[in-house]
Length: 443
Figure 1: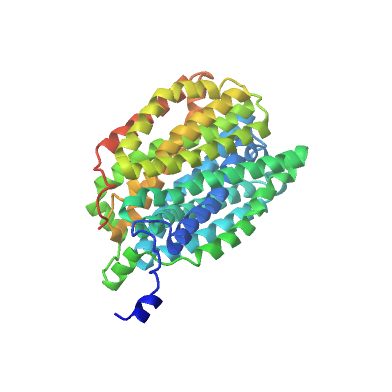
Figure 2: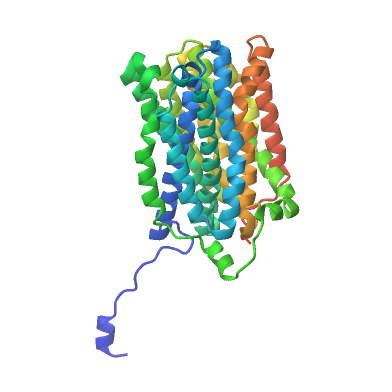
């Protein structure tokens, strides 16, 4: 080799390690999963917040306060019931024609439904048509978010290196608490700004803001590429006519165990961020303070979610989920006591520990844990069916169940704490019956 050649040789460019998430494409994918999920969950959790403090008075004003709240929670449950349907429909097409297309469609559906809720006339204006339309729009929200999680999680999981799958997938999960933070802070700010007019028209503002957020999310989402695992299937021309039948026929055990494991996380969400908020406000705790502490709890959830996901890549999904389940069982009764003591500090501690710590520990590993139970050709359908099925019981009906248990107990919270402990124990057993998936290659 000549001196000239040696003298003009350039230092090879430095590339990120092959197992790094710090590449341009991965950063874009993770941002898309996080931001897109945050926007969709802003819409979905915004409804849950409004169901706790607004809809019972606006759309069920002809009922007593307790039954109005129950009816409001029933419309909330309708969205959760629709989530498995969304998971099945979006999973079917996501496994057949691609993850990316379904993510764009789910975001568009969510934005339209949420904006229309903000424009909906009240029961005093159009009678029974108002709550009927509210339920229909909530169902559309449920279908949309049912398709969102599976697509966002798989976009991250299927692009990520094996050693970082848990952490990468957590970006889709972290969109949940991030959306909760946005929704709660917006409602709190609007509530403070509009004062006595909040129940008249102020509550509509957070719903109408969804239109702008969806536009931002669509721009981000349209720039990401389809996952390499799906592209490989497409190139192989593998037939996937009915992914749902394939899942039910060949992977029923995985669906059941993943669903039961996920219920415990959703139970935390339903009890603390929906039922707990309504109980605190009804016990006289100041509304804006409750919402601000709920947002603070979501911030802590976000931090713990990322930490728990990273730890699950190191020590395994099962160990992290079992650890979280045990903590949840031990703390169930103390947290219920704090939620019901009628003080701001009691609510603050309960939401920080229950929502921030327990829910975050569960939330970090659960996305990768569920998705890794299924092979690529049915992963969108199988993971969505299990995850969204769990949302029905775990979050959709939990506020109603908790309200019913309080009535049955004559106003006490002991039955609610017992219910939470049983759900957490069931989830713990389900996790123990699965295989450790963090160290295996995806098929």
